[in-house]
Length: 127
Image (cartoon, rainbow, N blue to C red; front, side, top):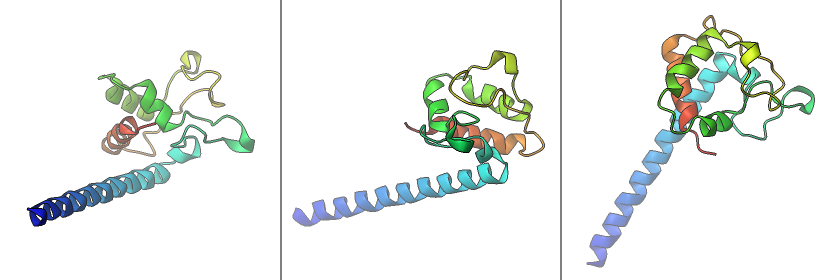
């Protein structure tokens, strides 16, 4: 009986390690996509990310974005549109939290498929 439990434990640990490795590979590929697309010039992942000269970041940290839109079924589509088309500086919803005024359109830097992947990854981040 002890051998059976040991085998189950070994399988569970192996699956956990495989899942963690797959997750870190996804994280790394999304970080590379974000870097290649210029996203990290304005955004960080963690809430304590600072912008130039230790000011507030230019754009909101992605874990804060994930927290703000948690449970919002329309967030993926809306944020993908914002990534591609930019947003209106007069309707800034991160006012007093970031130093940037608006998100510029990024369709020249990232295609819609990659923008969707990146947005979905951001929305899945945990604070």
